[in-house]
Length: 126
Image 1 (cartoon, rainbow, N blue to C red):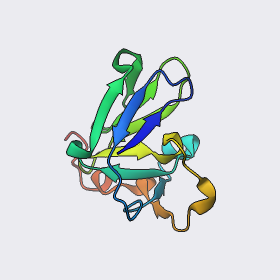
Image 2 (image 1 turned 90 degrees about the vertical axis):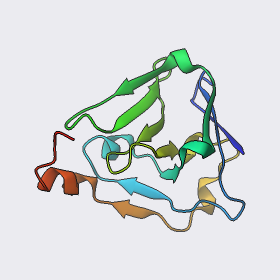
Image 3 (image 1 turned 135 degrees about the vertical axis):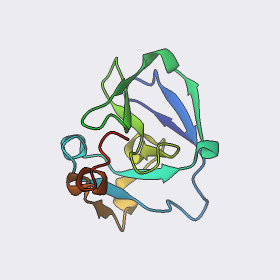
């Protein structure tokens, strides 16, 4: 289990990342993520837990209002989200992980959230 905190450390989360490392690191080019510039990885619900600061976590939604983007309202740092493609998953900001060394990143997948399939299929109201 790894600890994840916002900048002011008011929000504290715990995520289970496999010993072998991150399953997949990604960046998204949607209108929100490109502005955040965060590197993310996905975990299942059972591998994600809010330890402290739940009252400091605020939710932001836009466009289809399916994805939930969470941030600390005190310091403004994005900590995690639930993606549109599977709202039961949690995307976590790996830059918030304790002892995270961005120099060890080798591969980052670029996700095309700007051209999300839900925007093309007519399922925007899901």
